[in-house]
Image (cartoon, rainbow, N blue to C red):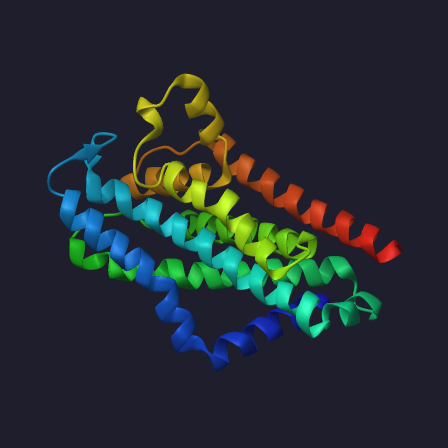
Length: 245
């Protein structure tokens, strides 16, 4: 019931503002594809492939990250600090873990929706990509991971500005460093290992391998699952702790 309630809330939110949500979500990926795709796509390569073929999976992973996080963090923060409706969830019979999962799945579905749109926008570039069930499963998992992070950020934030600061210090660095716009191969070994273990790096790497028709690393998939579990557990424990105070 709690999962269904949270998903229904996300659906109503999307239904009433689907055009604004869609346009705001795809404008940045479209600019990345145009600026980097046409600007660099025909003049350079990465990992032995044309740069545009390298770029598209990274932008898809980036889009699911940003959308999954923002679809949850800002609305939930407003509900908690401004509308004070989150307190009603805490005192209701709805199991807290179900509500957290519902918010996470809602953000993941929003991320999957935007990622599919970005995939369609990439078609005019004429890049041959292998798209499978695993491709979309990784997109969903990546969106769920950052949606869970969005729930945690919204619960921990003391002001509305804290969510924006969290995005500045966590989401923005990953946007530009985590195997999205350039390969990690030329980085120093220690830095490459550290950045390679971040969730967006893992998602980009798997999506890129699948799109190339190459073998992907199970370890990267497991790292994504570990991040998702850690964010979900952290949110639940932190919320229960606040509820008991």
